[in-house]
Length: 120
Image (cartoon, rainbow, N blue to C red; front, side):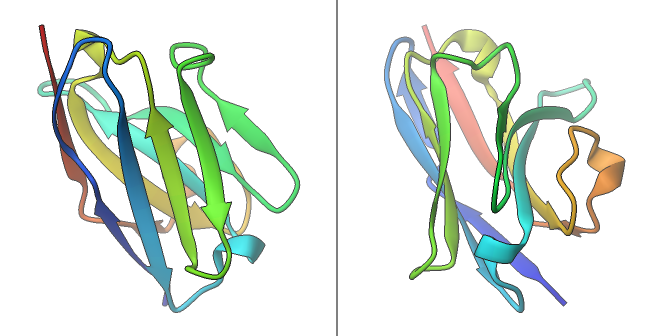
């Protein structure tokens, strides 16, 4: 059973940066597909970024601003957020499974989420 724990959320000003972490246990991030999704109030959960052993995938809305990376020694996946916008405000979730997908239904394992609020 893979367990995921997000951290690093908080309040950030427009144009600022924030780094989210997703620490995994019960599985190895280097052999899993690990993704970030976000959910704003009243809206559906949306794909942000994904990382597998071979590929990296970013949503169009965050390309050029966000990067996803992995530290195998810490068994952790990161989402570096830069040049943030008010529309980036959401609860950010990390998810993991065997195969990379941009659909939330494609993931069996989820963290509890971390709130990111962008102030203008």
